Length: 426
Image (cartoon, rainbow, N blue to C red; front, side):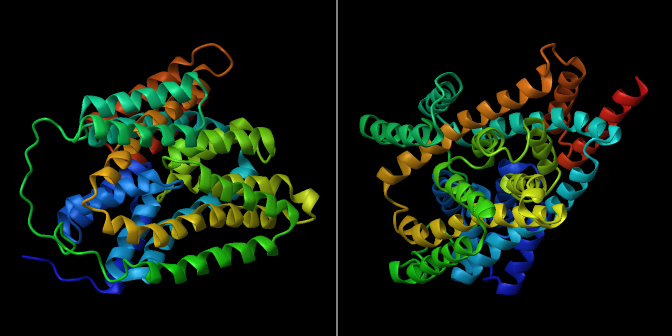
């Protein structure tokens, strides 16, 4: 039996709930959406969900928020997409801005430092598990596993930039599809029968999936961004331009973006220090919503540290910085969805398009592994000697979350408590 079409208010309630409970980074958030929308509510079929996911994986920017925007657009058009995308981010933004304020005031307190000491290994474990779970869902054939391995090697040992890796993966997908048609499909795959969904495999593209329907919100989104950019002062306009560039040239979601953000925010602009960046990632993992919301922390610290230069109170400058960083990171995502989703919906049966999208999803696994190594070097080696307690915490977190299915927030809480115990009582 096909489920009834949800009302706009019931969908809004779901997107807000998702924004409040979606912990664990993009892998966890995508899994939550899949479990709720595909398996339980049956608002969308498995294949339609994966087709939308592959497109969002290919886009620069936060794929989980883009997927929520895409699915909201499928259900209720432009207003549904805007609502889903905003509510998916809003709870995390408010919470992380508050945490950033507290961190700026109390970061040098021994208790705070001890808690973060215990949280950082847990964050490293979360990233490792994200790569593992995404790999299980994506790397269905040896060819896709090879694409992921090459992406990892290119970034880790050759220093290849993100756009080049993603472009190379797309090209590999095109070539593999020509040489071995159906390369991304397992040799023996049994399709499990599923009950019909509201937006099913056989459904035609929705009414809003037309070029004319996408032009108006696209123009409005770009116009709002240009207007806000002109209204900011030079310090915050530099920040706005950087995070717009980040949204446009980085691929693979939050875990792929963060090394690029760290390099520019720490080394180029000096908005915060490298240890503060790692602390910000730890705080970002304690909040729901997309992990790329860490840009709110970066923007807050950039405003806080530059307050004297700006002639503003640190708290006010920090809040402005957090707002600018968040807005200009997420604004392009709406433009990508409203402009591209109509074309993607019309291409569901086009294998030539699906092949590069699938290869890009595989490459993202390798990109996430590079972030895991980056964190491991900072957390486990530090000043040069191996930090065995931190390594033990990471291994314990991997077992707790991967084998015993302990929740992310519970594991982070235990990590913080163990960090305090180690620093103060041992």
